[in-house]
Image (cartoon, rainbow, N blue to C red; front, side, top):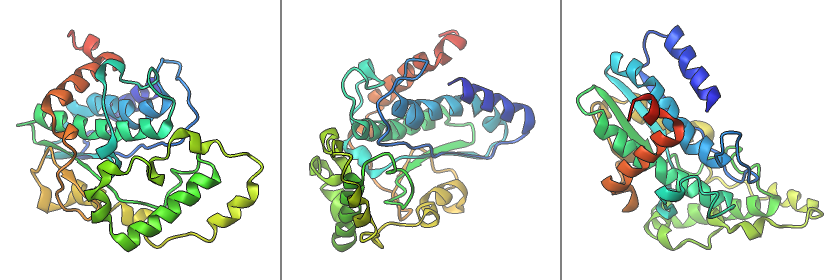
Length: 269
């Protein structure tokens, strides 16, 4: 969190305006570790860091209004859960992908509460699903998990993402949400890396294509003034999960996040 505070201070000192803030940090498959500040690393990277950065830059954005905040989530948030009493996740699991899903739900909840708090300021906040994008986010998984991910992507192409999203609640055993035990593949299976070259499915979007919904939320006139919404990878409005629409959970998550980052203390709360 210290590096985020330094970065935010640098922005405040060097920039007079901040019209758009995109929170796109994402990590999955990281080895389980706790930061020097006592935070599980995936949780800190995907959620708490962006939460802190956004709050530290809010005054600058309000002064720059109209301005927009865009939080990149994922459709896997449908499988996420948030236990505010055990927010960082290290008390319950060392499964990085479970933590990833949970943080993506936190991103949507954070956006919902942020939009509510920013009403009347001219600053909007929306979250989105970028789709299945060909990036390096899977690089921390072994070759078998990455292979299964690519094979699953082929089925996504054949079946259609709408079908996947419609039944995402029942995908707990699908490759996208592999339990941590599957990652325990003998290190000697190095030849399996060759199989990855056989599966480079066209259903994976390029980074440029995957940025479409982010850019849409950031600059499109069609969403000027729209706030607190969740957009799909095709830039259409989409109803997020039931948990993501819970205003009470969003408020509790915000308050606990303020406590974890020290913002509550600095605001005299």
